[in-house]
Image 1 (cartoon, rainbow, N blue to C red):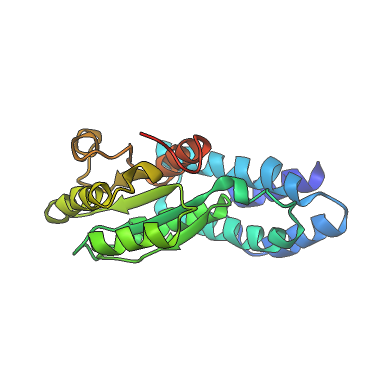
Image 2: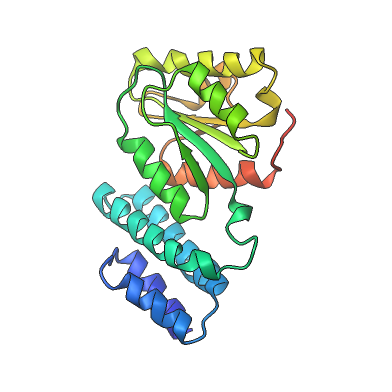
Length: 218
């Protein structure tokens, strides 16, 4: 329990320096990798996200915590039992067509990857055709996540969902949208499955969507 508590505390305090040595020491001492992930890192990252939502933690600290989580998970991967990380799911992410703002997307990438998700990051200004191609290239992906920072680029989210419908693959993947101008009402209007206001909310909603099955029928 000592290592679990120390690792959880270090993550909550955003102490990146020393985390790798701490995780390696815990493994050498016989602490199971799955326990380190599920009983220390993930609960601590949840607490970090909750503090961010309440305004007790700021964006730079959240980014450091996510990077620290990612570094720890990379060490644990070879030691985890077969399905520990696979169970989280695969997520395709990108910003809407003609939207070049990637701070929010990058943060979600870090938070999800730290939480054990496999991420297919398409970058910024992703066209509906490119999103569609990614869904075809990654049939094991459960969720497609889109963000937009501008009201002028939000419309391309709906165009992407329309492209998925036209290609007959919409039923194979869940779509979640977010970003400063995006609202829950807008998400419903364009036919998205979920909306998230920030990175922590996105992580929780994506977990829920992935847990409903790899190929989800609408």
